[in-house]
Amino acid sequence: MSAVNDTKLKYAMFLLTRIPGQEDVHLWISIPFCFIYVFSILGNSAILFIIKTDPSLHEPMYIFLSMLAVTDLGLSISTIPTILGIYLFNSSEISLNACFAQLFFIHSFVFTESSILLLMAFDRFVAISNPLRYASILTLPRISKMGLVCVLRGVAVSFPFPFLLKRFQYCRANVLSHSYCLHQDVMNLACSDITVNYVYGLFLTVFTVGLDSLLIFLSYVMILKTVLSIASHAECLRALNTCVSHLCAVLLFYIPDIGLALIHRLGKGSSPLLQIVLGYIFLLAPPLMNPIVYSVKSKHLRSRIIRVFRGRRDMPAASGSGVEGGRQNGQGAALALACRAAAGMSLCAPGGEGAAGFRGKGSTQICLLPLTRGAQRRARSRPLLGVAWGHQLQHPSRLPA
Image 1 (tube, rainbow, N blue to C red):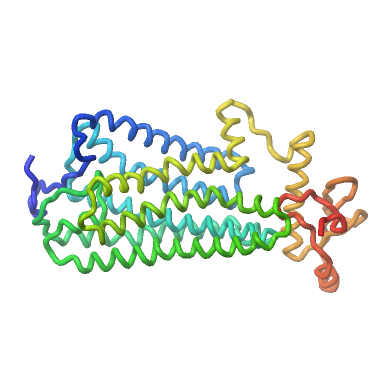
Image 2: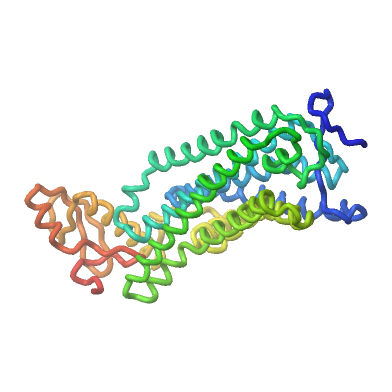
């Protein structure tokens, strides 16, 4: 079919690009794409289902993970029609309006995912540097507002793209560089002055993806500084291990994104195959790999996924029995006490009247009492209960130095 070069024509189209030189095996190429989309959708849906149905996972880290899964689902669904259509049904045409709509959704989800990765870095920083105030800083209303800001930011910065592109005349070849539409790809086909689009796109790349990646890097510098101050080598490794899955998600997202942006703006003579492959990695790798990485690295999430697939009923942590149940109850009580202590409460020995008590290791009972102002000053001069990195609930005098 001949290429249509004038956007004012009624049936103006763009032509999508497949992997060059492999026309005879396009049907076979579609098979791995189908598996990637199936596993991406099932994996992220499973993450959402398990986090929603398990109250023990209603914590900031897993709430941020559910936000990441939603954006990954959005990215997968935004690119499914064109990528599978071009390989399965040999449908390489896309109308201008459909192209503008697709690029709007793709860029919105990309900018939103960048913001969510930044929030997850902040979550890890607070959990490691200030564990006693973790629950009081990242409350559910605050997390909800953060998520809403991320979505509004992604939509707001992507909203002008379709309108900036619709004003152009496309008198050059209407063949795109990918199997989907991107703003920087479409604007290069215009025969008008694209200075406004170029400056706006560069501004967004620097002050959204670039700024987010810089803040994530700084947060990890501060995390590393905090972790290196921990005396115990084992506790240091345990703290760093909680960041591995997020660090993998950051690398999977930012390396292809920054590479693709540099190729579109600076790599005029780059290989078309390199652009296509990097474009596929940019949009397909994060939705596929994020559920796998978090399921492998998160012990709690992995155990619940196994229970779901085995058909076992997940027992609440509060009703745990035996040694493991006692350990979980002790750690949960310790965390609750630490958060209360940071909020101005005190820890006391047995015998406190009207106190809510928890029994930890041995026979020592730790209880909680509201204090007067004078008692608060005396209590704050004493060491608080050490619960960072999973210490058993103990009397302060028994904690390691």
